[in-house]
Image 1 (cartoon, rainbow, N blue to C red):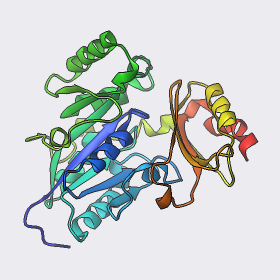
Image 2: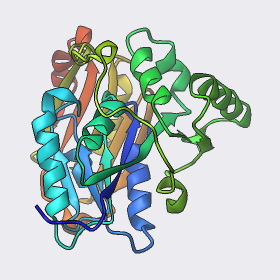
Image 3: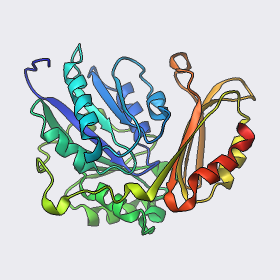
Amino acid sequence: MTIREKPLPMTVLAGFLGAGKTTVVNHLLRHAGGRRIMVLVNDFGELPIDEELIATREENILTLANGCACCSMGGDLFAAFSTALDFMPPPDHLLIEASGVAEPKRIANFARAEPDLALNGIVTVVDALNYEITRSDARLSEILKNQIQTAHMLLLSKCDLVGSQDIERHKEALRELNKSAPVLAISNGVLATDIFFGIENPTLGIGPTEEDEHHHSHESDFSRWSFKAEGAVDKTGLLEILEMLPSSVLRLKGIFKSSEDDQLWTVHKVGSYVDFSRLTTPENFSGKAGFVAIGLSSSNLTEIMDKAFATLD
């Protein structure tokens, strides 16, 4: 392992499915101010969609695939830490974009157990557009609450899509759950990097306590689905499919070539909100087009998605 003069700072970026974490990461990478930021992406599906959506496609992207970055994948997480610490030239900061159902304190505690890493803090992104829906769902509210309460900074995202009264109401609700973390309203992932990386003196325990014992109870609540897009996709038809999906499909994202203009596009869906945009770095695209989704296990996600996407096959 490379000998470092000082520990590598690490930030955990948390937030429920579709909150806008990747948008924040892309903004940070584009406005790094000379920092070498290494990003570790914890994708939730078989295809590395999140990795493809990171704008800066240099050799500073690490991927952990399939699942919740917590105790069951501790070996993989420590291996990723080791890779980051050995990387040359050495990064200035390690940023972990956790999966949407991950417990950020777990990841932070792993970092605290590594002497060559220094926890810079947990930043949780909260979706202003879908906060009330997620918070009121008994199956999802505890995950969201945990992500909010363990944060050192809270970013209320998508504030351009809601009214000012909703923003203030959400801020107050977040302050009730976490009295110590600053709450910042953001749009399109825009946040000054000095604010994001300037969290000071986070206080977390090094390891889990007995009452914190984690048994992946939430992981059984979710199912994952993926679909490889072999050819061009009709964007209009895809939108019709996405608009017909039930609310049990919590999050979908993908990269595809549109049959309408022969260009690469990305799609994000969370709740009823669907967003299409051109892939910003098509020259670096790996060619692995497709879609990944996560939904409630009780909803027969695979059956629903396979039937919906059958016309694209």
